[in-house]
Length: 379
Image 1 (cartoon, helix red, strand yellow):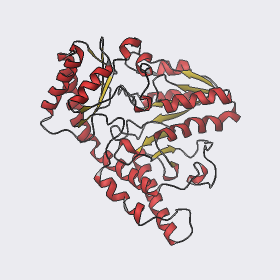
Image 2 (tube, rainbow, N blue to C red):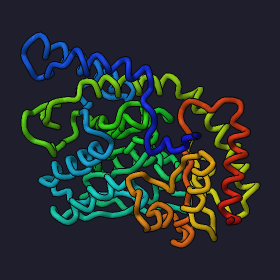
Image 3 (cartoon, rainbow, N blue to C red):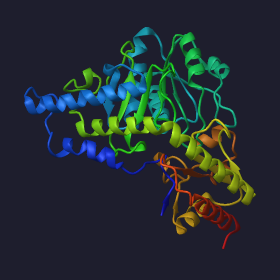
Image 4 (cartoon, one colour):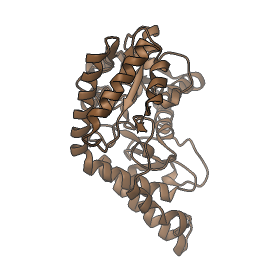
């Protein structure tokens, strides 16, 4: 089997499992407990927090461990906007291609708290320009929430330029870096808050983090014991935090070498598919894109047929975001990019892992192209 759905999730790395295993079986204390067993767990938790903060370019106290990327995005969007309502800032800016956790949070704030939400315009490749963002900003904008790189089409945003426009308007910027962590540098973005998820990096599912600068007001969503400096109550997942710190450090250390190798591989794959399948069209920015994320539409054929044919040949891919799995609706990302609904429903996403495939990958790419051709041609 060739697994090409790493944007949805990936396997647990052996190094990560070895690092976290002692905190599952042996160092089991509650980090809030004031005894030796608890203090040992608390020490491991704070060490993991510092390690995550270092990769994100934040202070140790800025990092809030969460149950994953969705919770981190919810905490950022809801928490920051709710905390700024008393300032008279009741406006939120998102883009129409964001992950459902951001769009759903925006919808909640609109329905239950009277927040006005504006979707900034994107171009056909899913790019947001500073001028487009400036046109969406208002004097009462509390927050701009944008993805660093799109989870379906891989387009990378120019976050530093968008951060400058956001701050000029007195607003704060939250960056969803769930897809970009481990692929792109996360320091120097100018973000006020950054969300990441461990299972995209090689941890078990169920751990993530929101790094939010100390000066940023944040209303907690979970109340109770006051853990995470009062920003996220609940007994902390110590093993998960250790896993996240380990996976993030490994991905960061390997980022340049693996990114270049995977980018070269995906470029060959794109060229092979476009050359062999006339119906195929690449979606997203052809140049400024994540190294491992490749998405096509196949006009005139069901995307499901392509997926089934690929799986029959042992290739696992997807039609887009795993969080929208099971939906018959066309991708909201492609619709926002101007793709016709009937064509958007034919999309197939291939997402490569961070460890490059071996030299025999050329034969694998040929099999992928053959599968695509068969699905388009039909039985």
